[in-house]
Image 1 (cartoon, rainbow, N blue to C red):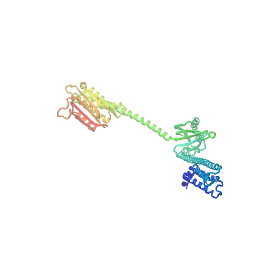
Image 2: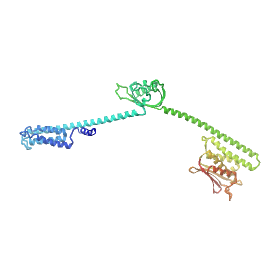
Image 3: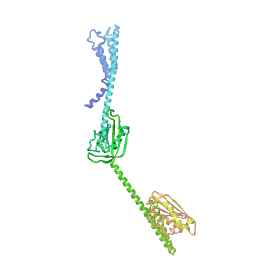
Image 4: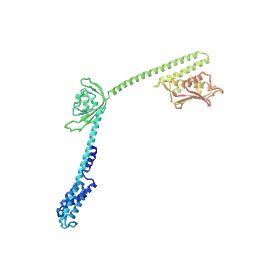
Length: 486
């Protein structure tokens, strides 16, 4: 029923009881006809020639407004001339005074039509204003209910403080939950939170006096959870927002919206995390020191082994035995060099192999000084980091291949060049090559010096790297080791 009546009420308010245009003009014609029909009982027909038409003109103007009122006025004026003045049934007027009556009737109709039209417009404007005011009232009421619902169900604590003593005017359930057994509404902040007043009161006074918003993050505030309970330190993110002018100055000093969020759990978790991070940093530092010490001691122990091998080589008269011991000393020294570099870097599990290769080649030049004087060594290596489990076999292979070139590629004191290259051959694949421009392989042999211990070591280490060793045809000798980047 409410739904069916509402459109009619709105239409009535919009038109202010004014008839629709078509119905208004039809009514004007009918009223003009009724005005003449109402005069039929009069005898003679010229009795009261003008005043009888006035009610019908006024009714038409009232119902239809300007247009229908003018139409009825025109028709009634013509009827009064034709039917109510001498000579009857003629538009000729015998008495000039009758024209004054006709003019008065017409003027009455025009004025009435104008006045009723303005009245209808005013009524329509008033009805529209009332409708808009009603809609605005409903919208404001809906927004008010929505805002109240948001505040009521918000997980953030909200309170509205009022007056110069900061009295709690409104608290939502989340704020009340901070002290569930404490009555807040109608009491002041000092009464509800006496243990925190030295912190809160200066802030609230500053917000009230300066009319500026105050924000705090992680502020420590002592708080009790109920009467008789000891206070505990809690941490809050909160904002104080001044709301001046909400009420007349005589009744209040303004309002302050207090929005708070208890972040004690996050704060304590953050402190625990910081503590854990400090412990982890201390553990990592301790581990780093221990690993550096391990690498340093391994390097020293390998240096001792290399020295023992050197002493043993010097004490042996056999040339082959001495050469074997010297080769073993060189290999131990190659491994010791890796641990030396690891102990001097921040990354204790990997090294820049390009830098290591440069230092290793300098070591070999020192060991084979006579050959190094006539054999140039060139290094072309990309800055590639390797883990120790990959760097050790790769270093031994590089040492064996370079030493093999020193020993066999340039007989009879020939001059020459050895090129060492390290690069990525494909994504995740490394390529280490040693190339010389010496005499090359002996025809019919698969590898130069294939019976040597060094090349057998190279084959074993290549399998350990799950790689491949390939002899590439060139003017001298080029051996290429390919393996996965680990």
